[in-house]
Amino acid sequence: MFEAGGKDPLGLTTMKNQGGWWRSSAIRQLHARHLPRITKHLLALSPEDRYLRFGYAAHDEQILKYAKGLNFEQDSVFGIFNWRLRLIAMAHVAYSVDKHLDACAEFGVSVDKSARGRGLGGLLFERAVTHARNEGVALMFIHALSENTAMLKIAKKAGASIEQEAGETQAYLRLPPATFDTRMSEMLEEQWAQTEYRLKVQAKEFMALLANLQEIRKGVQDGRHRSGS
Image 1: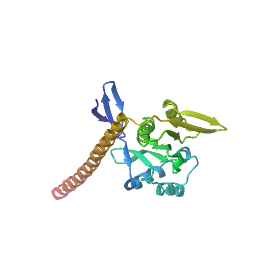
Image 2: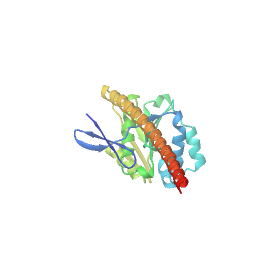
Image 3: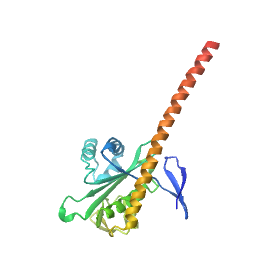
Image 4: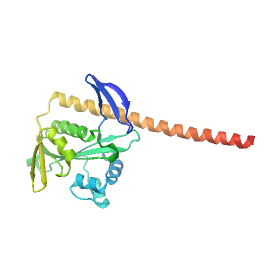
């Protein structure tokens, strides 16, 4: 059983279970309407982060082409938003288009530099694995270069098989079939994510309203000051 907690400086929600406090954040499944935020997130990645994410130092035009080519009907994309509704981490689960390999998928993830060290990549991986199992995926390949120690650590922790040869890394995880628990877990996760996102939208709108009221009050005070001088 979980209880609502507070927020850290990034605006990520904390929750508490019977074992104590742990950091989490609702992970939403993204759709075509989120494409502008996805594009903005990817373009903000540094050259090094682009290299680790895509396997090459992708320039802006290549990232724009990648984002534009995302097929939200074929693949699954997940994201984490902060309280300013900025996408700070996202994962792409690409399913095989070959019908003979329809039980295979590839996982790729990117995390904003400001949100590192909080386990968001691992959370996205867990969410992606649950979703992939429910979609009938039996083998998840993890997109990771040998230099991407963070992603390889996540893969090893999950029990993935990792093969390295000539500086190249191939990581894959065998997934068990879906269960009632995995289906319920994903359903509850998505419901929580939608609820949290609505709260973030309301919070952002409320803060904008407060800022506007403060400007009005300041204008009134300045007017009184001038008239009294």
